[in-house]
Length: 99
Image (tube, rainbow, N blue to C red; front, side):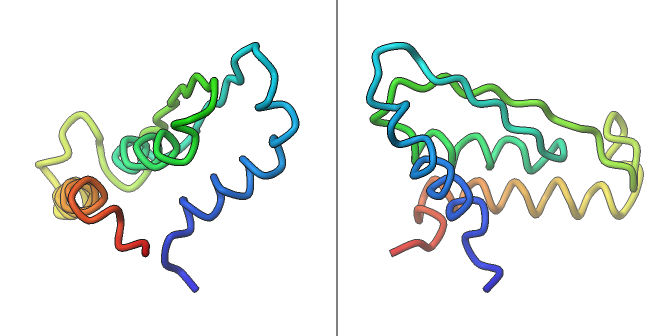
């Protein structure tokens, strides 16, 4: 099943970290993802870890298929940026389609 992969991954990580999250010192998580997807990944992580003492960092890796500084100059860049824009809006407005 390809749906909600990011959400399921963060839920699994939270379960694995369960004992450590109960402590008072903050847990620091760094997310490494392709540039446009990194924003949505961080949004989902904040939803999963919202009740915990967690600091979430994001490392956005530039895509290899187009110049991320001139994304509008290629069809691949436009597709990626617009699709991620819609996906972020969907995540915010509809909770990513999760029940």
